[in-house]
Amino acid sequence: MRIFKFGGASVKDANGVKNLTTVLLKTGEKEVLIVVSAMGKMTNAFENIVHTYLNKDNTIEQKISFVKDYHKNIITELFHQQSHPIYKEIDNIWMQLSYFLIQNKKTNLHFVYDQIVSLAEIISTKIISAYLEQVNIKNKWIDARKFIKTNTSYREAKVNWTLTKENIKQLKQQTGIFITQGFIASDASGNSTTLGREGSDYSAAIFAYCLDAESLTVFKDVAGVLNADPRVFNDTILLEKISYREVIEMAFYGASVIHPKTLQPLQQKEIPLFVKSFKNPLEKGTIIGKSIDLQPKTPCFIVKNNQLLISIATRDFSFMMEDNISEIFDLLHQNKLRVNLIQNTAISFSVCLEDKFNNFNHFLTQLKLKYKGLYNKEVTLLTIRHFNQKTIDKIKKENEILLQQTTRETVQFVVKTIKNH
Image (tube, rainbow, N blue to C red; front, side):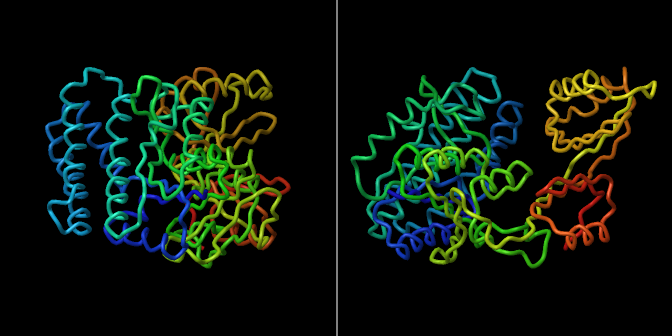
């Protein structure tokens, strides 16, 4: 069995669904489990429903109408007969949503989020499964929530591997094409849970691990893993081969091509991961595996925007010692500030961080009770793996550098704004 994963961008409209069919025909796969995300930006659209519902916002009907119309347009383009069963199936899901909004008594954001947002994947895969049947590609639709079991940490659920492996191994005795969802699972009570944003790759890896799959292929709107974001850098290079370790390093620094959690189960069983273009599925793309040297060996650029750089010093100019650093990190942890780079001198301590939860001002107020702090907002962290002197010179020449840190394989710059290269 092979695992294919298609993201939202690949099935954002009717043509995307048709192209998924083309990929299956071109690759000739007959034994494959296909994991599919919500269509286009529908996860965001369903999130809007969650927030309007919990805020008792009277625009909720508009938000629901938007997602209904989006899917209806795709369905009517794919299925010309109004009597096709898919219309009733999707209507039933809208009824489930309405029933939940009326009957639900819980106000926990994360619980409500998972019950509502998970429907986007269900709808997406129902439509795709029905369309494959229409073009004579036999398949079986399965509900990932019945196979992947988790705890109740809604929105960031942890997989119960014992139950999940027991459930998924049932599929080993079956053959053919399966269609299922990424991102979603369920807890012991049957409530929907989700695995974190961009968790569809992780879902695919879970199925691959439990099925001892031959390989996992993630189809994207790029040719494979590139050495830089093409929206920021010109003349990007396709990385043809790359190791699990290298991808984990890149993910740690902020590369968004592969979800960090995806690689762990694949690495345990040495299941190769292919990253390919859904437009050109027969091109070789990128292969990620064990002990593979980076090919070609070239500098890799990773950009993280919307960073904060703060330099901290004691008020009496005494040395920054272990107890000071420990105290500062405790404050960072309390305020859920993610640290991406640290550098210290005798009397100061600099941190480049992310403020996802808008807690920086509260952190600063606490910090200034004992320390001095100077900071820059809206800076960019640029990480270069496998750097050479030419790349360092170019970055220094074209950007205003606030901080630089160099190790054997990696150099990092905090710059005011990254310029296109």
